[in-house]
Image 1 (cartoon, rainbow, N blue to C red):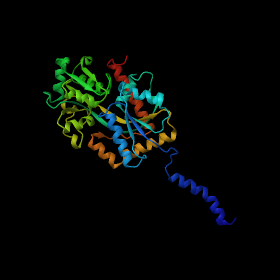
Image 2: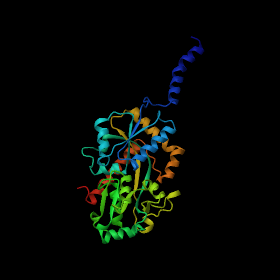
Image 3: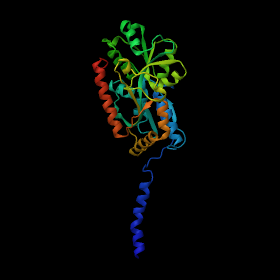
Image 4: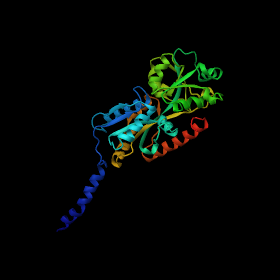
Length: 330
């Protein structure tokens, strides 16, 4: 064997290894992909699935289109149980999640299920909470609304897209406490399966106020159907949302951020898990997603893989402690 042949023989495996390393390092190849939105159409989970799925398609991160399946029930519990019990090994499935998910897990609202039964993929941003009323409501500020609740708790019913004791409910109770309402259990809250349904009931006059996330309210505000009394952010948001006052500037120091992200089946393979973490991260880093975030009032929250898993764990622990403090969890 001459020197050239010897060099070629020695370098061939290295060249192959280098070529493999420069290619996508995923043994998993996605097939027919699906995102479950654990509520009906029009809410935050539905929007998360559809916007991220469309961006993945546009960036050619998945083959074809991503199917979005709306599976409501149990405030997300029906979808959670189905993933664990029936689709635990599905490598092509991701599920939209948010602070509402960690809230229910913190409160044991998904009977027999815990956060460790699924794999947490990545966040795609955060929505700040808000309180809104119908456009023709007599209330124009959050303190005005809370003053009415304080004098006559039966006069105001809040609606949200989470269960009683869920994140939408907790936001109102925190605001009520800041407004000097000592008996927060007197605050009326009506639970719906999603923000879209809650706003529909507000517009129908069945309830007097809506608690949700600013991205859920945007379309209804633009249509002139509702008015936002307060955004639960530390300071005013930018862009189209700069016109909405914060609760803090109205004298109520309430901050409530709803993270948005995804989990996957607990039995998903390591290669598939790495694939989805990478693709969701690529969406987050894209110009397209930054434009979507700005348009929908979403703020930065960039957590992936283990960092996101740890964040959700901390969120579950914090909400569990808060829920015990206000008597929702014994």
